[in-house]
Image (cartoon, rainbow, N blue to C red; front, side, top):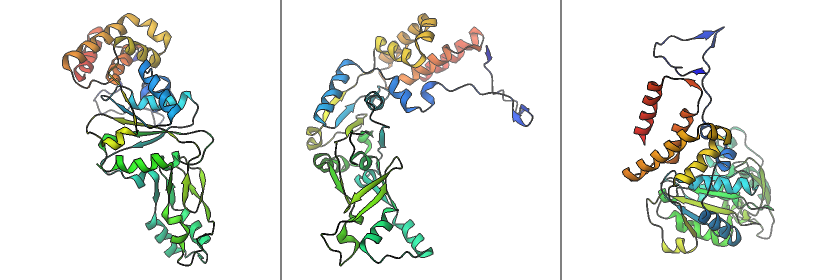
Length: 329
């Protein structure tokens, strides 16, 4: 067994040869920020699996609604992992998010600053485009539309927090499957640019890879798998909803929670602590129904983690810790 108390409040630093002698406990698996682990531990209900497959076949954006902690974002990670479609592209939305932010960023001030320190030789439209391209970085939405043999999975997280115009702004990109970077268009590079001239330069994608752009145009080869999440904080325009497939995730029941817990802690640990874990799962579901609030699954996982640790803790102290965690739920 390991000691439970790592912080004592005595302000006395414990060191050995100048290094801390106290080893902090490892974090829970879900606090290691491992994207693959997040996908592996997701256990979607049958109706969610069905809707994901419909979205895969139709290549329509999937809008997932539900309370916080129901696994909306984790479902996107699971899709990317199981289908082997590379790292998930995540675009977290806030009230200041714009379409261009999702597509690309152009650091005009950085280019101006660098050009003043080291003036480049820009005598052709191609040279100007090459110089501009060094200051352009594709966003998650833009990277999802880069031509690929396999589609990427794009998570637009908490779109209900967006400005009122963003959902409608997304419609054209979703329908056309392309977008333009005006700064790289020939007619913007030079007043005397030949409109038939082909200008190809490399910009940087969100995952730090060079992407060849011709005449400022990005056209997807395979339409990305777009998953959007919403906590239900606002309504969406009818035109936007018509173009989306919709899935609602309810909070998992006790059976589903047991499978989620098993996926996080592993079969051996779950079997060893099964009786106590089942008791905590049932208590969690009971409290959630009585309080009728947004209790998230990770609140249960916090309790599970402490219950399954081999730590020196008296029964009374352990009960006190669990009561505090339950009070948080």
